[in-house]
Length: 173
Image (cartoon, rainbow, N blue to C red):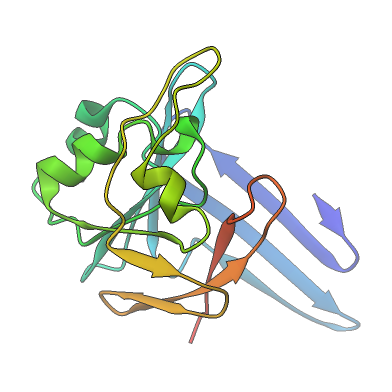
């Protein structure tokens, strides 16, 4: 992928650890970053194959978007302690295993304050699968910071796909 003066090579296995090499060139100067500042593992789950991320800095552990198949998520977590579950939005294909994961681990659930009421009271779909309702422990808003281990994730409101969609930004400091 080339964007301006940023060249990025990304290797993603079917499931497992995400690795990237990023080369940034500014005139005569350039540098290359390989890997990430945290361990990023992922599973491809559910009938529309959504990504569920397991992210750790060696101190804290979080899961982003537990879409389906709680047993496979728990297997990836292994004997580590799950500190947080973050939902980027309320759709069933991103929260399908949320309630079971929360019950199995006791981890706190984070979601936007706008999408939290839907996650807590999942409507019956007109067609297709549904997700079980689950309590949201921490309702997030734009510019909040979620701290897990030594990671400080800035919440960025990205409404559109759902009114309360969020992205997370991890500063490299």
